[in-house]
Length: 347
Image (cartoon, rainbow, N blue to C red; front, side):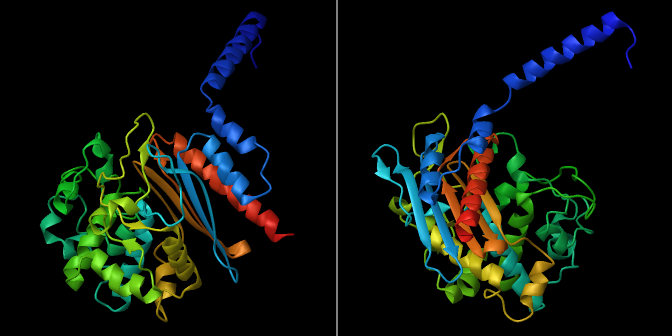
């Protein structure tokens, strides 16, 4: 307890000033987005999201036993004022890790790969270039528990992204590990860069060829593609970065592309187990997650399965800023969509 009265009053005043100062930096639009009255309909919520400053938005909702529903708002092309539509392709970014994790599961189940084998076993040339390579297991890489630095953390990476496997890998080589294997967690795209290359070395197919043959085609998903080079650019939603007027959808960051429907069907198959052969799902459950978000310049997305209402939701927004603000706003919107679905399910 502060016994000196003058000192106590000074401390109170200082605390008051610091509190007021901290309020100046509160991202009030996030608070406002959270506290706004919840619209009665899904379309109302999607329209409300555009009012927060996003260019375009597409939402896919599939409740078990019912036809999928699509909701759109805003534009897919800012310059030509073309409305957003549910059939446009978008860059799914890190949602693609779900497909790669399934591929690794299949290869482990077939004993072509081993979860206990190390990075050094599969990539002996990296033993002297990645710290702890002889102790980082395949499982560590799948679960982001390897400690391998994230190549996309390289300064100004998104302003001048590497376009090849080796170019990306070079950005993570000869750096100190973030932690010893299995002694921490750090989301690192380098893990999945290496897993993609491992699929190629193991099967003789690129990871995208393998995913197409062993995951996409069995599920009848013909609107999912390995890269921007595999699609007609006119079929891709416009992608926008805050502060820039031009459409950056043509910038190649190495992402898979898909329609919301294709992602939704895959996510349902992942969660109900139909993407797996007998015995594979238990293995996958010990390895990786069942939903995922994606973020890169021009696109942010969230693919979620809600067990309590047995519903898949895929949300795509084609405006980003990569400083966390727009991502947090998109996650608030996604949560509000879930809340509306819960309310509707109880009627």
